[in-house]
Length: 373
Image (cartoon, rainbow, N blue to C red; front, side):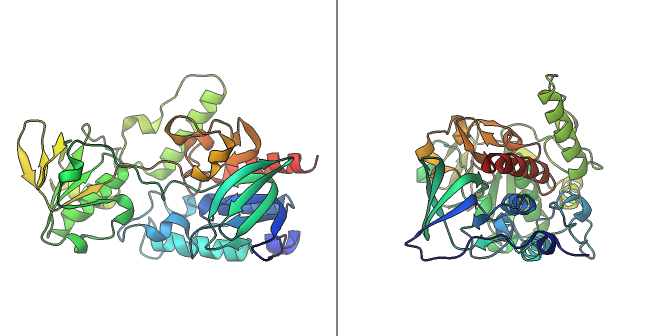
């Protein structure tokens, strides 16, 4: 069976000197899962495009995940459009390395025109085009797809005394394995999936004194619920809201944390007991709400991310929490800009592998209609 590349032809913009402004139909900024899904559907529409990716290699944020991370869903429910993710022997839920291999293969299979090590710095309006300034040169395009994700913008809340704490502070993006914390006292902050998974990873190691702290009592999903049910619930919720019905809540209303096997093991062994958030830092640790204190060696902030959209600042579109108002994936204040993969505000479950396909297809269809005018 011929590949998509064979049947549609390899549409790509010709490389040129970085001093020359290049022209194309679409510039996709970001070469992770959202950027690749966009590329797949732009290719199907017969458009000329380029994907600018700041990373030196394929895999997007997945290549930076911690060692023990696994998907919430089986491989067959974690695929980009057009290509099923192969199963990983011995793992119902594939690990991050398997995802990186899949994304690298996907990019190669469809011969997607990814320019690596290229960082977009600004987007400006330029008559009937958008001008994308990158560190390797400039592109003029009829449309831009922003697929930069959030991994490069970790968020850490402001807690009194943070500057006086003499220990180590790091974010989810910097965590790799318990080996880095052997014999240490560690606080993990965050009541979401990353906080629970990293706290469990450390607790199960047995050589780390770990305290898990959250803003409120953690809520675990039922053990038989994984990413498949969450995706279905997110899709149903979006459809209900689009139809003018009330928020369905769905499965996600039953909890926040997917009880993947390591979390279940740590929880059932009594190793995953959360303590409510500390009130301030001290020079040697933290002070709790009851005024008691704990000395710690390190604090790991699993407190989420913000969308990486600073390069869009010249367009004047960003609102509260750095979001850009959208209708579907299309920016409300700039019809030539589409945002993809940042969360439900850019498509139901669009920050997931399986969820990004549908909004990527819709964005490509809208762009094709606009370009053909």
